[in-house]
Image (cartoon, rainbow, N blue to C red; front, side):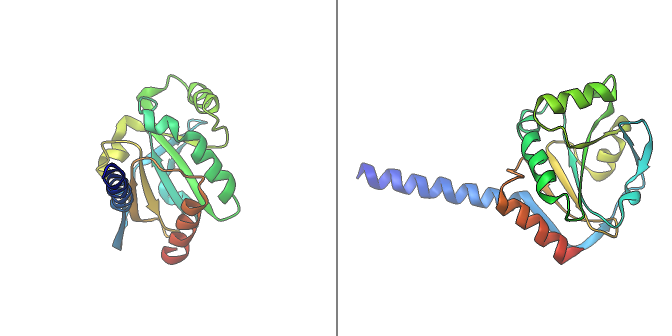
Length: 175
């Protein structure tokens, strides 16, 4: 009887975990236009997201005060390295008020085994506000035309081969 209960609980927990993962991914039936706001790169240059057209973009909203965000930094770095020849661009976006300097931000991600990430800041949180994002981690999926095709809420094992393949398939299906 005890073995039956443990098996049942394991099944329920596994099912819930799989369901929660599926609910974390939201792909839209129709792509949405992105806000026109600018973000700031490590050199202090303001850049519009439209300048990344031609790339399939993962706009990853994160915070240095978010434990799941920090835990996934090295996985994201692995994802970047696995997809660097795939025309997939990862943009790490954090609030500008979390950093005194770009060097501080760079040192932070390097300390957490993520030296290859492209780092940007969101001035006064305006872009994330326009996108309706108030929690992190949160990933906005942007097609090669610069339109949002969906979102992923929460952390993921980004360098897992199944996740890499899933993102590559999204790119192929949605451009």
